Amino acid sequence: MKILVTGAAGFIGSTLCERLLQEESYEVIGLDALIPSSTPVRAREHNLSQLLRHPRFTFIRQDLLKISWESLLPNVDIVYHLAGIPGVRSSWGDDFKTYIMNNIEATQRLLEGCRQYPVKKFIYASTSSVYGEKTGQVNEAAITEPLSPYGVSKLTGEHLCKVYAHNDNIPVVILRFFTVYGPRQRPDMAFHRFITHILHNKPITIYGDGHQTRDFTYVEDCVTAIAAAAAAEGIIGETINIGGKERASVLECISMIEDIFGKKVELRYMGKAFGEPRHTWADISKAQTLLGYEPTTDLCKGMKAEILDICNNPSL
Image 1: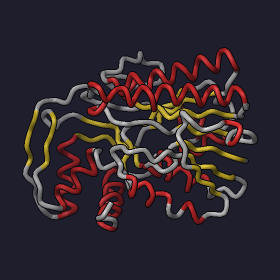
Image 2: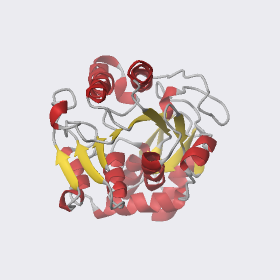
Image 3: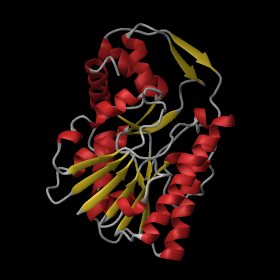
């Protein structure tokens, strides 16, 4: 089976490629433009280092908005579309142009490519940011009310997938990720910032009161669910939450990191960040039923793995 993964050099994308290659019948094509972003190019090149030595992995450095589909899509069975610009806080103002181009236009162009060269599954990576502010566990039927331009851009991508599924029978599956963490996490994400600041005895800035909670999904659990979508039957047209094993508040996470390092850190409080919900909590019952998904990594174990990765790669 030939699988295309866009955003293959990223945090989740590179981990997914490694997981897919554990299946001997899979051949993986990784596509990434390596454009400047919140993750330095050298870090994404490091993410690819093991993959580039694998005989069933091919890397293509190209922009989704420019690549010729004729050279890429023929004979591809499954597309995992993970490429895009992430991040809530950087999506405001003039920077939203980048989100439009990379999250909306690139998705539409890839769907057009799959219209020309049909695939068996088109799996779109979305986000819990499409839900907005909710209380309690959130299932996939909840009303989508994004609070940020980033959330709007990803929800627009979902709508594009549904339009092409309706009009061109593209076999779309939408996966909504909830706060993924672990080795290779982007430097702008909370855990990475907390860990590096505690490591270097720098104060941590908290937006809001620190009691906001997130459903944290360890990256290896996340890619277990994503990879399962390749072989799963009866999931075409479905939207599926991918959440984690454990929820916690920001202050609880910082306390956990302090305990692991055996030292305290100075906390500085600022106003609540625009566009971020106070709580997230995934109902993963659909993922359990359709994908056989069961997250296994608790927050402390996952946090230790991310800390080890950061300590082992200080130059990244």
